[in-house]
Image 1 (cartoon, rainbow, N blue to C red):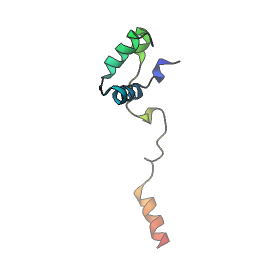
Image 2 (image 1 turned 180 degrees about the vertical axis):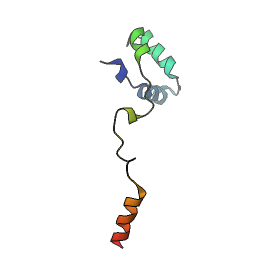
Image 3 (image 1 turned 90 degrees about the vertical axis):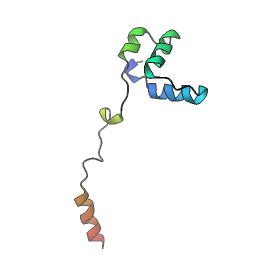
Image 4 (image 1 turned 30 degrees about the horizontal axis):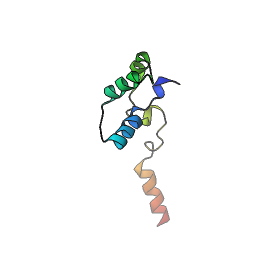
Length: 76
């Protein structure tokens, strides 16, 4: 398993939902190491996911409002 694919957001949400405790990402990584679920080396390589844009193409940003406006005029 690649450590860059560990989603700390999901782990954080699961901890919060089950315990009511909202932990920071550094604390979560520390606990994962303490429980021997990952190594310290793996923990230091985990990237915190900020958004999905770095993994997927965003096809919604290329649309212009003028093209949608002209199609509305044609329909009228």
